Image (cartoon, rainbow, N blue to C red; front, side, top):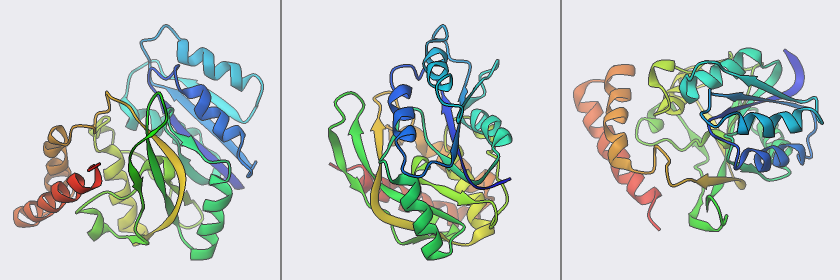
Length: 256
């Protein structure tokens, strides 16, 4: 583990269109002690995304590309990057999302202020092409716990960072594939650290792509239930209560 180094975990699947802009927002960070590990998840794009990443990696040695020979989903791709990560801090940035220039600096300062193991921030929700806001910014709560996260997931991966001096490196449950894998990840972490701290400042742009797996909440109901019932092993009545909370909160969260 290299003290002070931030390891940025970026899974990529058919990312050629947007990954260059994502990388640019990392290069523009005011906090310079970082490594970016981009894992191409066997994209069926004739190497288009790989070529974009390679063009940046040739110019900046902090950018590392790993080309997976097998499609493993976002959870498997993130695990490959986590295995290679050498930093004290682990952060996540999807290959189409955008950080403000002071994202790392402000999140690390916020982490020190709260003496926190993990922090996350508020974010804008933008159109994938025009980058205009399509929904109101999502303003995070001051804190999340395991119990609160059973009702709703307030942590968006591209806003989060955690400190390996205060918690173990956690790997993704690859059985989840690319659906609810991040949710299971945060539940696992919150069992260990008890509380995550939310920075209300908007530091990330989430590009809402039309083909997003989580865009249609009806398609996520069963995977959400599976997390509560099968992964977390909660009693039936607790699952019913939390799934009802999740459905109502999700409706309000995505209301224009």
